[in-house]
Amino acid sequence: MIYNPTEQERFSVVSVYVNTPKVKVLSSSGKPVVIQLGAVWDGSASISREAYQISFVTHVPPLGFGVYQLLEGLNTETILADYNLYHTDKSKLVKPQRIFNIKEIPNALDEIMLENSYMKVWFSGSSGLLEKINTKEDNKNHRIKIEFVWYGTTSNRDKSGAYLFLPDGEAKPYVFSDPPAIRVTHGKIFSEVTTFFHHLTHTVRLYKVQGLEGQSLEIFNIVDIRGEYNREIAMRISSDIETHNRFYSDLNGYQIQPRQTMSKLPLQANFYPMTTMAYIQDARVRLTLHSAQSLGVASLKNGQLEVIMDRRLMQDDNRGLGQGIQDNKITANLFRLLLEKRNGVDTVG
Image 1 (tube, one colour):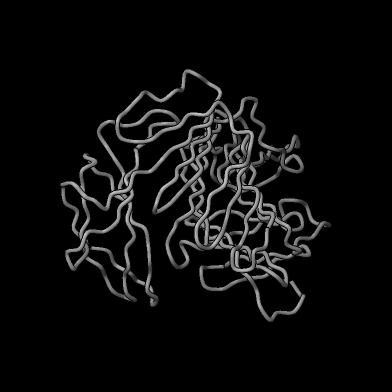
Image 2 (cartoon, rainbow, N blue to C red):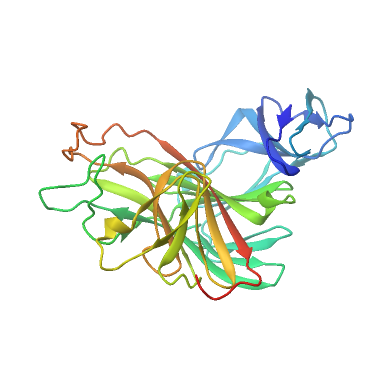
């Protein structure tokens, strides 16, 4: 049973883990539902032989629910996901298996492209990170780039801690010495690009459904900085939107507050809490980052949004906790990136 708590009908993708590839899903009327059968991966190159992932589209009315049956048996509506793996390490070659079509490529020199009925999305062939979006409604290209950055802490007596953010200057780019492994999934229900860095696993998923899920990108980061010393990792989204040093974030999930980035203030004074969302805009478009968790957000340069994903700090900041932040866990961060066209608005940001 799937419940829709909103006042709008929803087309949403549901994923379930099963122990056999021979499964079928029936709707409330008893008709088979198209499902995407995918592998369950352990890391970048290992596939589980005992678990599989099925995904299917549900249609649920406003404030209503839908009932689906999951049964074991052959299903003519099952469509297998295909995989392209880009890496340079021959030790990470996937062991042959019978079900999925897996193509291994030494490295990706060209861009990687995903597409649905709303947009085309391009990723870097070397880093696997988002670079550009084309909206099919107006056939316009938008430069929207994702990257990761590090913040250190100041060398002064007072340093960053559980309550204080005192960086040692502007963020430094996240640099990787070896090209990361990249896994590209192509499917009927969704396609995605997953990149495996040393400190994080980054996934961008494009759903092929109607409504908000198909009009936006789902971003999922698994962050592990347990071995770092006085560092904080952030995700930065850069665009060609003319923001004029202004962005917007929510106070409590209901109210949206305009924020003005001021160069006369220290860098840390331009960070604000983001409960559920933040966005930047100009007269043409609005770019919204929806967040499943509360994080700190800033727009330090024109067209940018930046969120702090995890912090590891070795000292107390003398604000009452009595310790640093050294109990880090592997941290999951879930976002949704939505690009919208604006109509009939003035030029004020």
